[in-house]
Length: 138
Image (cartoon, rainbow, N blue to C red; front, side):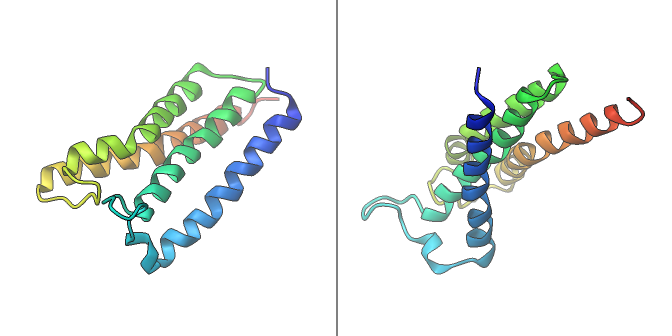
């Protein structure tokens, strides 16, 4: 079992990485399209996005797992989102056929958008369900 101190440290690290990542990605800085390695065709922006799409559901997963009123639905939805987040880069490559995630096929692009949106919305849906289930309870 994770101690309370370790739990809060993990959550703090998640926020420390997530918040600057959002700022970097929303500002559209030029270095985001630069490859991670000299001969690699995997942009830094995609790596940052992949990390953030893993951290976001991890934050909720840790929070729901730690809660006193663990619900299987909350954990199931956040676990699915976490697995989707961990595999996002590989799945994105499969959908697009390249590491820059440039889509030639609109059907694959739409599937990729849905897949990516699920990573964000499943934990948020879990949160809303949990909040609604607590209304009116002592």
